[in-house]
Amino acid sequence: MKPFRIFLANVGKRQIEFPLVTPPMGIMSLAAYIRSRFDADILLLNQKVPNCPNSRVVAMARDFNADVVGLSATSPTAHNLPEITRGIRTAMPGALIILGGAHASSVGGDALLNTDADAAVAGEGELALEQILRARFEGGSLADVPGIFRKNSDGEIVQNPGHIPFIKDIDTLPPPAYDLIDLAPYWKLQSMPPLPRRRYASLFSSRGCPYNCIYCHRIFGNRFRFHSADRIADEMQYLQKTYGVDDFEFLDDIFNLNKGRVFDLAEQMKHRGIRTRLAFPNGVRTDIFTKQDLETLVDMGMYYASFALESGSPRIQQLIGKKLDIDKFLENVRYAVSLGVFANGFAMMGFPTETEADLQRTIDVACQSRLHTISFFTTTPFPSTPMHAMATARYPDRINAISFDDMEYAGLTINLSDVPDHVLYAYQRKANRRFFLNPGRMARLIRDYPKPYTLPLYLPVFLRRASKGLVRR
Picture 1 (cartoon, rainbow, N blue to C red):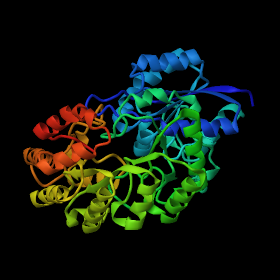
Picture 2 (picture 1 turned 90 degrees about the vertical axis):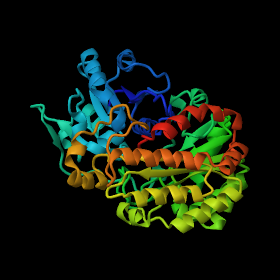
Picture 3 (picture 1 turned 60 degrees about the horizontal axis):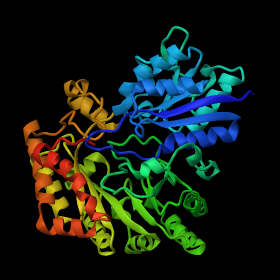
């Protein structure tokens, strides 16, 4: 096979309220895998870093003279795909254009609508992209790649029969291609809020989650697959030595599911003399922690973690499939904070059938907790989730009116609850005011925040939420 050039981009610009930017782990993993299988020249772009217009994305692909263009998008950023794919098709008529990411996983073949892309890949991308490239450059056909969505000769969107299995042993995957990005700009931009700016690198140490929360895409399936402690420690040492990072954030959906792995990693870090700070801004399951788990993580360097409550109502917990033990949640947050962990929280308001009593219970539990900060998001039913199906059956008119464009972390799109819009908004405002205007909590927040002098940066966010509510998740 002749060498080829592949351009991979994370599509979307930074949001005003939540200018969240983290290393593009998805396309970094794809790039690392592809160059382990092919003689390929690869260029990566995270559009959020330069915050460049779509025309610049097209120009970079054109100037790179890419044979293949892969575009990863979330549903809120997918509105950029028609313009970008049209531009690429005009500039490079013969290029193969592939869509992936959370949006393609969510909507499947509909990701190709109104675009000039050739195919879309849902779910885990490495093996599918490898087969697509072999079909492209070894005389095959996209029609032979199992499970992908593509446009046939008549321009119709079809899905190929079959499916490509998940990778069982993810330790067989090469480490993400950090060498293909410039890491330093990420240290000056906002990572997962409210984490402060710092010299960090991201780690994605597991895939899959066995829980059945109805609002989740479950892109990586229900089976929990994880990197070994040796593999994680190797990556940490490499990133520390190569880039001088002194902080790692784990972006797993549920890092702490396998307790043995946590203890093994602690031993590896101790044995190798790895000293660092650890943040868990995305996913730990709070009610399965033991005191020993939390103590071990703090000994490893954990200083920050996000604990997802979602709802303080036991009825809603059953409805949404999370089935969180709320008392255990409160106990473990309290103990983590006593160990010196800065505790951020997530809650969601506006679930199907949710009542004022349910909303009030979420506020009560959040305010009863020892969380330092929390986001009271508005529930949004993303396509292909069980909650979307529930909402479609219950409120078809509201679902049809939903628009994800440019609403990555702000902007209510739908109210699925049993209360009117103005009541839901009022409860969101009440939640933010009661939680954050507690003098004791304010004092703890200022005392315990890793970089308290940066807290004024978040004041506009609080003021908006306290006055309007309207923050979706």
